[in-house]
Image (cartoon, rainbow, N blue to C red; front, top):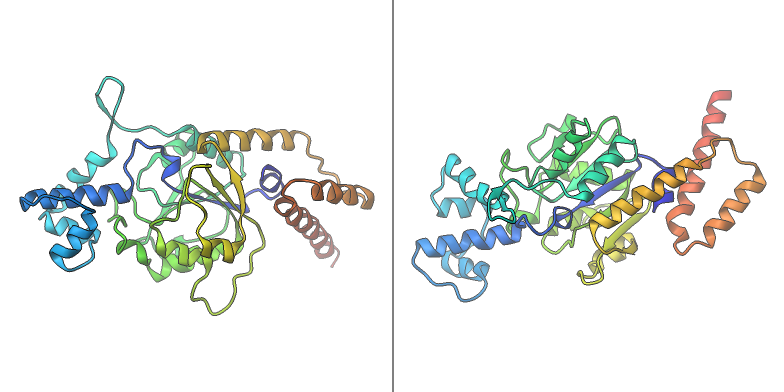
Length: 325
């Protein structure tokens, strides 16, 4: 993975989930269930089973972000006050504090500053990734469903954070299964372009609830098969859910077992630094190229590095040809 990113800087996008932010901030699933408990309490009803099942039986519809706050009769100010409680944590002394970026956030921010990554897709609502980048002197562009299409660029000219499920407190949030089924046509087209033109490193995301995002990722319903130039790498802990079968069938991702997102990004950047330190910029001779291919084929996962090695040399040849025309 380190070789692939070092060889093709800004050609791998990150797809991050709640595992990046740690367990202190509640997920959309947890917020949804807690809001339904509040609705039940307001109705003086006792919940015994799954809050989602209670809501469906009680109201005869699927819960949505707008519907939940409608049941709570929450206006704009009330809505923000209710949500704010889910983005505050308690320290060791029990004091309420705002969460801070994790080591994984900080390592990713360093990779952005070093020109290794420019596109970050996240299902998280919080602004911890933005904080980490700003601490490194980087002001990212935040893209949501409400963003204008002309801002949805795949050109790696600046860092862009695509918050597919909303941005707290700026937009409504996609939290419920009904909300997560679909996205705006503009955002779907944007994600499809990213998934087509970039490699993908997935970390901290289980794909459990994000059914609409899974469909875009796998290209379900598209007229033609997506042509992918770079690899898909899925990082998962030993105790986490298996990669969904439809994703495995469509993308054939290379799986990396990790202890945590923090350790993974720390180790990834450390290895990239070693590779860059000893990187040779001179054009390779035929014999050197052959040796590099042989060495790559002996690696445990040659499919990660070999395509990038071939594409790197192809790009170099094309540049020479264009220069001589």
